[in-house]
Length: 313
Image (tube, rainbow, N blue to C red):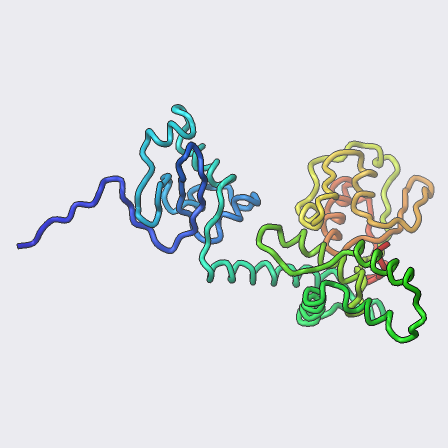
């Protein structure tokens, strides 16, 4: 005779999930999320909780399907705290638990993104041509395997005339130089790409230099002091991996100068202001849109060179 199996009312079975855990009030609370969505939520890419959570509930144990009792939540987070706010706090402050396969896949995605960004921003200073992602990857592997010191240490060999003081000085300089030890999943790909570029330029496992477009920008002087409309473009924000470049206020002239990384010369000729300078390729589109919109077609952008290179200080 078949028997009914009673499952506790607060038990929900979930599989194939990413867990986020937070210990509070002597209890550990968990939420079940879709894979890859937690980092997107924390970075601001994903804002809809429905796309992040597999189920909008707080658990004591996701693996056992045991949801957290209301009294436990009230004791830990406050009696009047809505469940959504509790979930958001766990999402933001909790520790993410991922499986080995997912961790490896996540690391591989970040690695590929970093390599793609670096390959798009560095060129061979002699030929002014970009490197393939494979060559950039090999150069980064060389740095990470030797701690960034392999290339420079080889240069010091040969004469045998270096004094101990010279050796100590070289070691101190080496400590101050940027290094690359590989990608991590706790930092954005853009910020890691910036670190990778600094290390590649400093140590030169292959000849590299940052690519710049040389532009001439012309704008009516009557518009320069007007306040800029709107906020910084998406391209500008995304290109500022080090978080220094978002300039959403100021005059039209200020905003144009914020796109230009190095000014070669600027002058006023009649009723027009002209500037020649270097701009990263990723910022070209945003600059063009800004100048076109703010000047209503009266401003101009002229590309003088597509791949000008220079070494960073």
